[in-house]
Structures are given as C-alpha cells and as structure tokens.
View 1 (cartoon, one colour):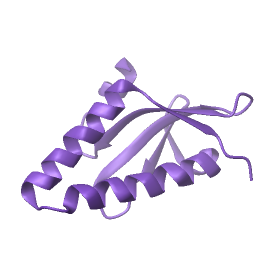
View 2 (cartoon, rainbow, N blue to C red):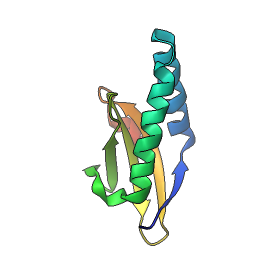
View 3 (spheres, rainbow, N blue to C red):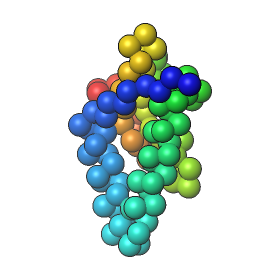
Length: 100
C-alpha cells in the first residue's frame, strides 16, 4: 500500500487548534480525544486518499469518527501528495474551502 505525503495548510492547522481549544474548554481531555480521532482519519486518508467522497471539484471529505467534523483535502496521485485544506465542523459554510 502506497502512503501519501501529508501537507496541512496553515489555515487547517488553525482549524485544529480552534477545535482542540473548544473541546478542552468544555471538557478536559476531549480536545485530546478529538486530535486522536483526527490523526486516525489522516492516517486513513494517507493510505486510501480516493476512498472518501468528493464534495466539490477535486475536494474530498473524510469524516472524523465521534466528532461532527470533516477533513477536506485534495491529492495528487502522481506526486503522492495530499493537501489538507480544512478541518471544519459540519455546520460551517463550505465556501471557506473555496477560498483556501
């Protein structure tokens, strides 16, 4: 199985920090649980980038188990690179991704 290189955009890093802080504020340890599930999702994406639904032109979404968030990404099969554009709550407007 070919593993892809993962590149996380700075905006997506901020998404992660914001979600982590929100969950930790509401329940200590929940932010850590969020990051663990996110890491599992990213690992799955790196092994099977084409397995998640396409939500708009060339942008895939992987669901994070136990949390109402999606990982939005594109990938280049030839270069074996995945670019994570956003980590967003399901209620967020997807126009955010178009800007990234």
